[in-house]
Picture 1 (spheres, helix red, strand yellow):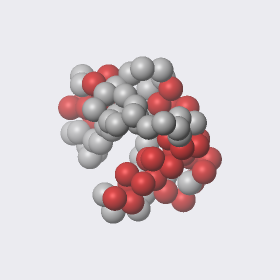
Picture 2 (tube, rainbow, N blue to C red):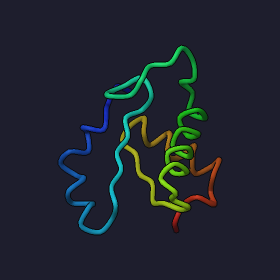
Picture 3 (cartoon, rainbow, N blue to C red):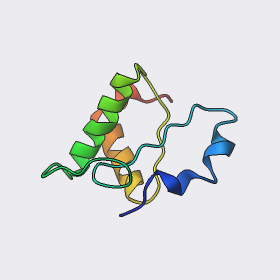
Picture 4 (cartoon, helix red, strand yellow):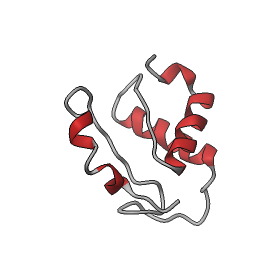
Length: 85
């Protein structure tokens, strides 16, 4: 539950050979700010959507490690049109 983007340090270079890699820290962890509320899977999925919107990425491949996998599944359920197949 407390992993940061650093968990991808060894894998990101391998993925970057074929994909653009973006590894954000979840709110409240790593280099992100803590908030007084908003730590549910739905909020984390919304954070991913806001990140994609800010980067002007219409569709993406999305993977997650551990709790990040739960966030990825929640994102997929909420925003299936934002995922590449």
